[in-house]
Image 1: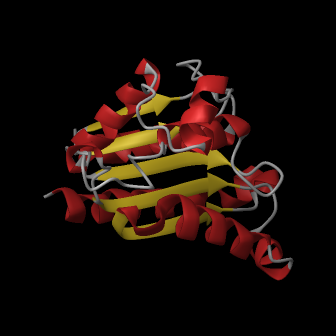
Image 2 (image 1 turned 180 degrees about the horizontal axis):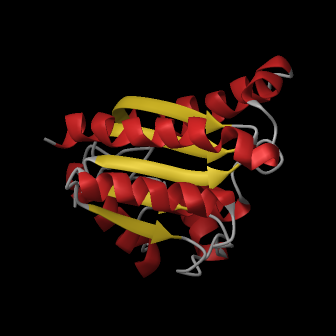
Length: 200
């Protein structure tokens, strides 16, 4: 699988879902293989268990990783591109996606790597792309510092050095959807071309 989409929104009536559908259509037109991890549809468990905390908090890598987390690791290892699609809620991603990072970016895999088990390390992917929808316009998010805060957390920490190339696109102004829809559609149209560059 070339592109793994991590999608997080509870409603198919949302503007974020519209963006996902446009994105899928663009990838299909370019004949780019992809798979979607719809975290709500999967009922992905976002809360860490006590055993997981013990493993993470004390770096007890002998404690086994849960099967649902292993499944996400397998998806990552088959991908060349990871694409995150979600709405901005209170200056960050939804809790379910935050929980995905908490659990899937496990110790000994995404950080705290052990030289004794290199085969279990998360590979470096070619491209990481973050697409988030926001009610406020981008100009306002930049002015009040929220956009920079989101970039710092998502790009510098969560994506970090795990990707050779990375980018974040904020599709702001969705409180006036009809006004921004043509501009956003044009942005989505160009994304498949960018991804194709990293999957050829």
